[in-house]
Image (cartoon, rainbow, N blue to C red; front, top):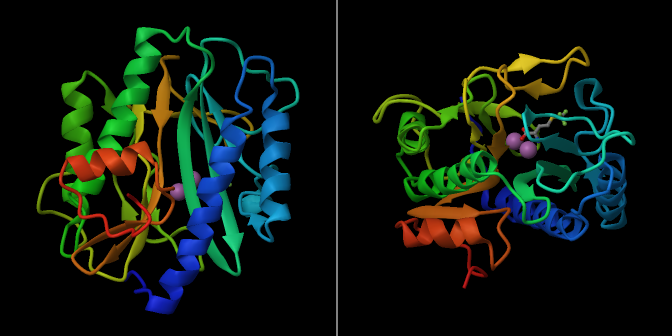
Amino acid sequence: MAKLKSADDIQMMRAAGRLAAETLRHVGAFVKAGISTEEINTIVHDYIVAHGAYPSPLNYRGFPKSVCTSINDVICHGIPNPDVKLNDGDIINIDVTVTLDGYFGDTSRTFYVGENISEERRLVTETSSESLARAMAVCSHGVRVGDIGHAIQSYAEARGCTVVRDFVGHGIGKIFHEEPAITHYGRPGTGVKLVRGMCFTIEPMINGGDWRSKMLKDGWTAVTPDGKPSAQFEHTIALIGDGIEVLTALPDDPIAHRARELGAKILWPELT
Ligand code: MF3
Ligand code: CO
Ligand code: CO
């Protein structure tokens, strides 16, 4: 059963979530053709450490780097590498997780490298961000995991995309990945009931073709089986009162604003 967070826990989660969001914004300014994913790793690592926190991926179950960098057909958990440089027209997901004073904040987004992005890459990227906003809009006390999954799956499939099943969102707190699993597919009214005091991530991975994933020999990098693109956005959310706080949204976060437009009850006071 998922652990419920106290008001004090959630105060700590706010600080961790905000630092993760600020790190992602900071590194985003460096996303340009020619930069290597190793350089992105260094930027993320140094920023997190300079702010008194730890880059959670580093040595997590043997992961060798401080951030995940997933380009084009990489679904998730791409490993930064000095030999991999961004090219004009690429899409890259940068997934930042920090541990601050023992609490985790986890957020990611897909960036466009330059303006020359193919229709297929734009489609998965926009479908992922919109599906996350739609999922946030159905979140409140009493919602079921299947309601969240359905909001994502029905939208993504209507757009001709598919939903990854091999990786899911997760409860989060003093543990990086805890219960409940947040599947990004499902049927309304089914699955675990989510209640106020829970903190979890929603992080839909949306593929342009086959929904399945293939693991590379490094044991981490998950790619699409058909080479088609995949995109992902992620927020850490707390169920509070009759709505949600988006712990990893800065005040100008476009997905949180879109979710509010769609009816999300977002209680984060700084989100104006
Ligand atoms: N940040 C990822 C998530 O959203 C997990 C990365 S685990 C790592 O859950 F070891 F690959 F870093
Ligand atoms: Co996560
Ligand atoms: Co993440």
